[in-house]
Length: 422
Image (cartoon, rainbow, N blue to C red):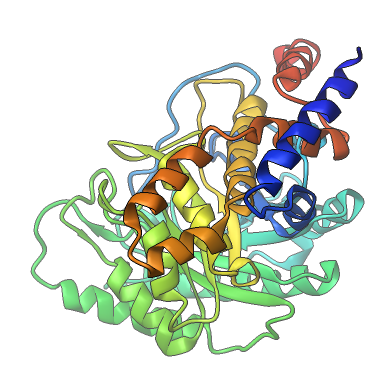
């Protein structure tokens, strides 16, 4: 019996098993078309970028650890790697690009001088791939960020520099969305903060609000561009105060009806952002998710199918929030094969959403509302050992991508033929 036949037979059994609970597996697979994941370009090169040949990651506690061979060092190499990743993933993806990854063609272009022409080749590449694109201002790893402050800097010359950078990034994002026909989510994260206890927290936060207001003076149609702001608990060297805290950005997002970015590595270790989604969406139209795997701190490990990620996906699906949630990944691991990291992390996220779509939510809610908490707990536990793997394999088969662990060999071959020759 062929492998494909076995997959189909296993799926038929799983379909019956889920149907007994009122779950339509065919519908769940079809609904996965709406789970669109934005792939972070910085996993290909450890957040180096293409501004200069010796660009180095620094600032705000960002750190890629490891030195696995095969890092992308040119735009062509990065696109080759991303194309390989896309070929191994079911479903739909987008590209998430930082401003430091412009196609500068060897020219020195400071960040307050970037224009759409520096990103046109990326737009054209996305068209060839049939995918959308998101964008990020890069407010780190720059001499004008050396003080630890950017948009909240008391050095007016530095602050104005970063405001101009943000203005240009928003303008570029709007053009990206216009050309690709799908809104570009522009995310703003800054590393601003203090290593030791500051006295004037309010001064820096007041400046940050002024800077954001100035950078957002130009309105762009939401069908072209959506603004998002991203908080962080702390960074290495910024342990005592982060200017852009969750409370600051949540208030700013509500006041201006923009997106707040929830990164599950940017909160206290015992906080779960899955719990925050329904709270935020009471007051703003949409949220941006950055899904990662923190280990003890915001260490950006490759995403795995764990309880935190499952809660995020379940909260989105249970509440029919998918149209109001933008899903992105945010990890950069230099200790393993970088293409493999992408595939493992993206598939883990997709699995979480498919599991959520296979949940008998109606029965669970009925138990909950009737106070039948034992029954709710028991059914949730039983769902963990249902034949999900058979549904996932069938989904991959239908999408014409590697099923199960088959992608490991494909990545090993790519490493041999491409990565090891760099």
